[in-house]
Length: 327
Length: 289
Image 1 (cartoon, rainbow over the protein chains, first blue to last red):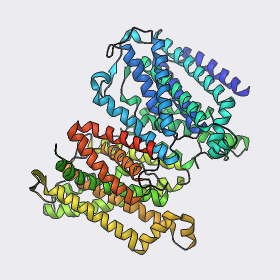
Image 2 (tube, chains in turn blue, orange):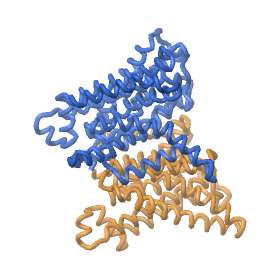
Image 3 (cartoon, helix red, strand yellow):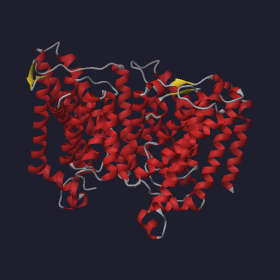
Image 4 (cartoon, chains in turn brown, red):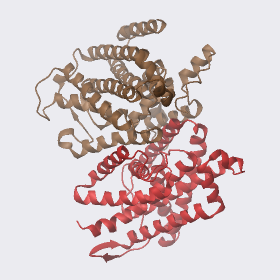
């Protein structure tokens, strides 16, 4: 119940935020909401189920390209409203989640990480090979008529509502009976199997749920930005997602949400300012990505368990170190 | 396309990949570290050699400059490998996912730095020898032959070092059972450091040889990493001999696909093959898990 109260407060604050903020900040906050969904959906598969999926951007990219192709005349298709194409993006991503989950079920630990790390690169290569359809590395833009309704303010509220509905749905999901079973699979797969949990089935469910929300979020981002490109699949995006979840605390739900939101804002606002400031007195060019990577390295070395988890531990005096999924 | 062409050109590429993959595999086998920064050593080798050669060629004759530049560049890459291990990997070694993330972040950071310093252009390292001969009607430059001979000899030396010398035996012992190795008085931390140095050195040599034949740019680090993954998955994680065999298989496959279809298909086919193999045999052809 306490968590739902926080949920409510957060929604209220963000719903009132447009009164105080200009369009540029609102535009960025809207994207930060979408990014939060990327992070939490990754946490569902990595933090709750213990499957180190380094190819989460595949789902985001599949959702993005699906809706983008359905919004342009690059492939033949019937005319569809924007929200339907976004939903189809989520569904197609779910099928890929099912397929990738089925392949990766046989793989454990390191092999899973290696194979899933390769997957986005396959898709990046394919978009380049079939650049006639997918627009190559640069991608393509979608017509203005396919944008979300209501201008910047409308976009902001749509992604706000989208973000909190997805978070609520995933929150309910991880706290149902299924969520408990997923954590059992994460903590000890053999033991889970021994007590009668169908490990294969629950891993697949987790992959599908994670893929569905990632695909939806990717698809929404396309209509938000009106452009699609291989950056939806990219490794730096994957790293940012992971950074968000780790900064917040992996496998804690709220950690991924808060961490993801803050990291997005830090990367797209603070780091860019910082980089341009540092560049005024340094002999070589420092990009905002460099600051991001340095922060990530430092963060991992100092707090391998996640900063917000550390703070929560400190405040409550409870040792959460029994969360040992990645040890 | 002839079969001979695939065999000749594939062996050369395979030799370089073997250098890269054996180091990657060795580090995993000994320290259980999946080093996503491994491709970076490859790129750094080429860049260090390029910069040193450019500087030195003003002072000493170009052949000497090239030899010194290559040797020093290899050593520098080795030390960079040790530094990355000591400062970033070692503090988080017990968290396997964190090792992956921290090395990936290091790889991307170095890529950004290379982009910032050298911009997005490709560089090449001057060749040790010039000229070419025909092998079964295919012109092959001496540089490529030298690259093949060098990579085979270095792998032979590595094999001798690991299997015959005392330090090599310590490495094997550590890879078999880290705690037992500690109990019999092996300084495991030193073994890890030596392994890291060797692995980075091998990748650096691979990078220099590659940059003499093709060209290297900041993005190469990630491309090489894909091949390294492909090879070690195929050969089995931690099996050095498995990865050497797999390196040649991947090399032949790369050349065959590039000549049959187009070079951009080479990576896709390699990756798809690997996934297919993993479905059939989740531990690679020679891996023990």
